[in-house]
View 1: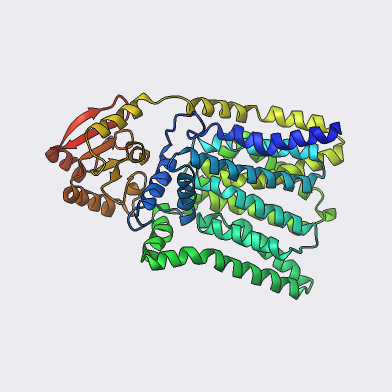
View 2: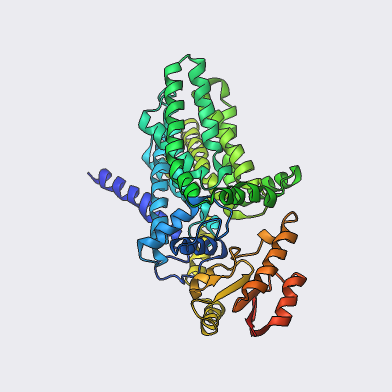
Length: 490
């Protein structure tokens, strides 16, 4: 009885309390400062405008897939516009993630008291990557990746067979990720190929047909509502431009940029010794490759890790730590296999494994403490700036923000004069900068926004067409101590 109670407490601690603890670093957490960071601000502003009748991609610009905005729309609707609703939905997603991470770890270790520390450590890997944000697109992916990874790992323990409901689940999850960040679907591509190769090599044509048919049908069924919405609202071309064409122009991919991206991704992962964990997993696999059961599974895991790092994180070449979020479920699987290998071959006690993971996590806990403190700090300059914007404009007035501060539209209840509600870093891509800045300057001349806010940290020197308009048509009404100048139309 005592063992059963202890197990239930440990389970709740792992899959409910720990997601809650991780999300305390969000600026949208209960009693936190409710000041979204720039990326979160972009998604929330887009969701806010869409709920007020604007069309995604055509009237309000961003280059993520539609599921990103659907998540934030649902979060805003949950509590009638209160930003806490986004946090609650985020909490639900992270609990689902924790549940399937635990189930996968238990499948591998066959021991609850090894699976709990593995799951907790994996969740802690999010601490430095979330960066005080709520609703990062890659964070929204986590339950879909974790659920699919569990079903794929499970299938290899059942001779590569998946029930129809599980095929439907992984296909649904794949489509949701495809409709959010197309470069993050390597897990499904790799494991589908591994499963199909196994089925064909064993001449299991029925299994091959069942998997392929169910998967394709579910992808079509899941994507259909989004495609119908885009066609019926005449935004399909805008959506394809933003998600595919713009991203291709914006990324400016080269061999050097990818190599740089791989380096910074591994450096960012190493904050939680995740690179060491992946190396340990590779070692544990290759040192017993000849006697290793389920080699197809390990091929799938290794290729998924490789492609997640290269395509999901490193493709843009940017040093952006939140990109590493998508690697966390695979790192959990790596860690579970390393722990199971060590426990089996070296007969190390479970408590010793837990203590080692606890020691390894000290830096992650330090990051978490730092970000929780930031989430509950006031930003007097931001609040003061929002007040000045409200006092010098009406809700119907259009304003412009030259920078990456879309959260200020949301906080001041104002709307952008342009569909380009943020300019950095998208306007600074070499292939796009001349066209975008030219069009933006013309919009300012035509719309004459009541206020223009300039982020001086991002733009110490403005393009001449924008600077000229500000000199001739606007006057400075606020000059911030750190980042912002606010101009009002004469």
